[in-house]
Image (cartoon, rainbow, N blue to C red; front, side, top):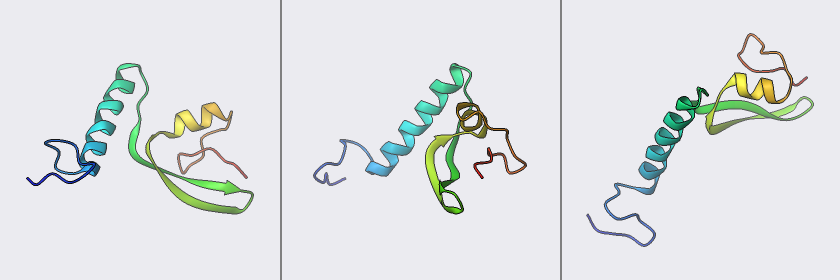
Length: 80
């Protein structure tokens, strides 16, 4: 493999390095009792203006508990 500037040695790609790290982080948090999903998406915004954003790791229970929100049918707290 030809090495490119800023490419990790022996890595297929930087995005693969990132995915590998997500898996390691997910396993660590699971060992601490926190179950996280890779590619967790939530609506982010103010009032009725929201946009879908995907985070590397997340879960509905952690978002709702941090914001003291009930978990809705969609699995997310209600921000309205």
